[in-house]
Image 1: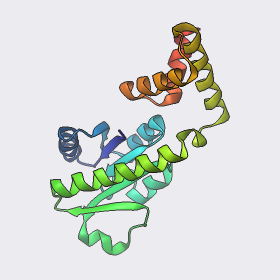
Image 2 (image 1 turned 180 degrees about the horizontal axis):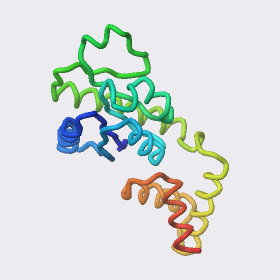
Image 3 (image 1 turned 135 degrees about the vertical axis):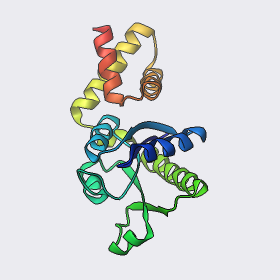
Image 4 (image 1 turned 45 degrees about the vertical axis):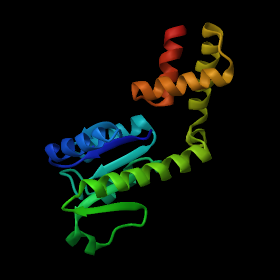
Length: 180
């Protein structure tokens, strides 16, 4: 499942969308009302989907898109009038008034494309050498302390990462701290 960040200037709007998504079994990682919060959460997650409004007090959606990792897909929720300004091709759009069925359909479609795109390519291609070393060290510690083979250790890292809503690197760091 792909982690989702919901961000609107009006926090109640964001919470409403979060409730809709969670009722339909989507994983909402966080709810924000500023672009700077979105950037912070996005950097913790490494990849996912951002559902956001047109502008925040600290920046517009197109500026936000420049600051988040390219492994994030964006769904922009805005009025049809604002579409006259043109929207980049790499941003999905839902117009207001928002229909629940349209929201769920688009999130489902974007999630499927996202999983296909990043699972096939392998997320580790976007990781730094230091991150890869840390993940390898954590796997080695799991193999020694839990008697797992390399594939089982990797799955353990992935599952723990997903269950705790942390990145693979953060989970690896926790395991290294635990066993060192």
